[in-house]
Amino acid sequence: VALEGVVKHDPDPGVRAAAVTALARQGAESAPAIEREADDEAQGVRTAALSALAAVLVDCSAEPEAAERMCDRDRIVTRLGRVLGSPPTPESLSAASAMLRIPNPSEPERARDVFTRALEAGDARLRGLAAVLCRALPAPGCSAAALRDRLRVESAPEVKLLVALAIGPRD
Image 1 (cartoon, one colour):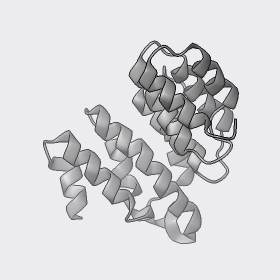
Image 2 (cartoon, rainbow, N blue to C red; image 1 turned 60 degrees about the horizontal axis):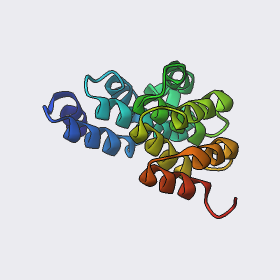
Image 3 (spheres, rainbow, N blue to C red; image 1 turned 90 degrees about the vertical axis):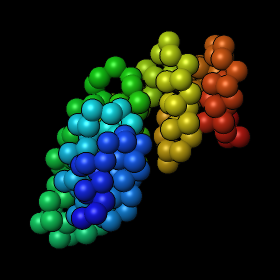
Image 4 (cartoon, one colour; image 1 turned 45 degrees about the horizontal axis):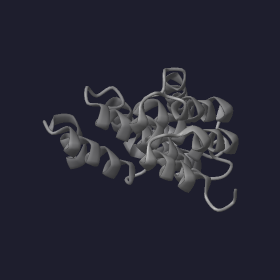
């Protein structure tokens, strides 16, 4: 209850984002509060909320009585899916990452496409974020071909390093 109060009322977006992340550790019962924050005015809070939903979804699936406690897997997956069609942003990358971390994702190719589009974006920070998130995904994760293509043409040294790390030693 205290964390929900921080999430709702703290004026600092960094504090709200951290509270959303901590709230996810409380399990399936925190889903409604986290979902509300996916509409926060601050990008960092929205991104944290979309990422936290993936953790909550695992609990929703693992706990049979979770749906009774307001943890509706289908509603959350639909929420994540709505963001996947938007142009690549930190929020859409977070939603795609969340979608690919849940068991049996409903639209894995659509989620992977968000990463491919982000790796092709004009914004080096967005390309770097995509590479970092790709590295953290469970296999099969991001498209290895998209990562290799980006590595060949990347001009920003820091992003090139992040892409190489995302590819890893397997390739």
